[in-house]
Amino acid sequence: MIIRKIAQDIIGYAYDLKASDIYLIPQTDYYDYYIRIHGQRQLVAQKDLKEMLGLISFLKYSAQMNISENRRPQSGTLDFELSTEVIQLRLSSIGNYKNEESLVIRLLYQDTGQLNFYFPDQMQLVAANLYQRGLFVFSGPTGSGKTTTLYQLAKQVAVEETVIAIEDPVEIRAPEILQLQVNDAADMSYTQLISGVLRHRPDTLIIGEIRDAQTAKAAVTAALSGHLVLTTLHARSSGGVVERLLDLNLSEVVLQNTLTAICYQRLFTDCQQIPRVLCDVMMAQDLRACLQKPKQQFVDWQSNMKLLLQYQLIDQQTYQTFKEG
Image 1: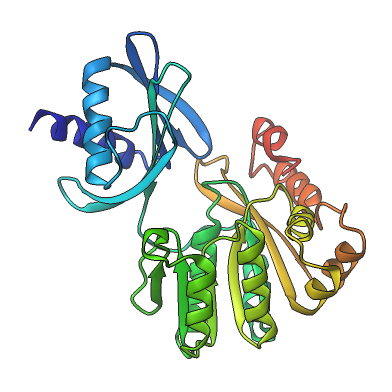
Image 2 (image 1 turned 120 degrees about the vertical axis):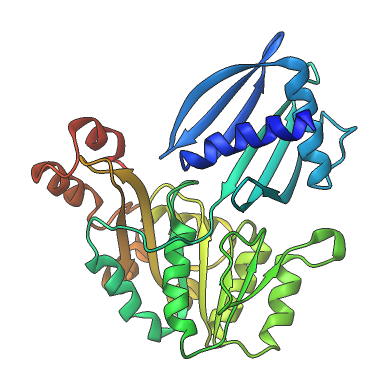
């Protein structure tokens, strides 16, 4: 089938380069084909209009999305077969003011190993404090590796304890963890699944992402009941996580009793072009200070960035790009 071959070529090319996202953006009589690698979007080619319209319909159909709707936002997931393996894709489509449809494809890679950290002791510190229970929040932009970091820690816990994950969708498949997937059509929302899972007596609960006030409330309820809760949240800094949680109607008192640690991270290459993670870890005294003064943004992000530049682990351009988080 011609369309399937086009899909395999476009997705396969991005997969081989370990791109995080594919963008198909409509122009007047063609489509721009972009990929995103290490946070940087790159134009690959300009693609034939009819071929891309056919490709979008094919992928939407495969993901059980409505192919006749090209205006309203839609999302879906599918397992896509390449020549050597199957990769999970997350699709997002939306039409512009001329009803021309764009498609963004997120490539969800399976865990192939450990992330490299600029300062490995940061993760050792977080891991050593998991016994405290409470809410651990991992933050950073899309593609920063926060879910991978979360799972690296969760797998350590799962050696001796029961870990249940609730995600939308499941991004990293881990047989040692009981993984559930949100399905709003089947009346299985984050909050409904969290309520049911707590009766399943887990030691540790993974909540894929806190997106709204209801999920935030359910997460802290689980943490208050003595569980270790690992989750992610989009924010621009460690302190931004606190501000965001307060914006979601969680009181300072509740956060003082539940929030154990925040790990903000970014993924960028060193001078040898090896992708590594830099974290800003906020816990204990730093976290208490931030709760009293939420405008504090980082613990030691800027100083660590200066160290990386000083020891020539990163170049000047990388420093300028990431020095503010």
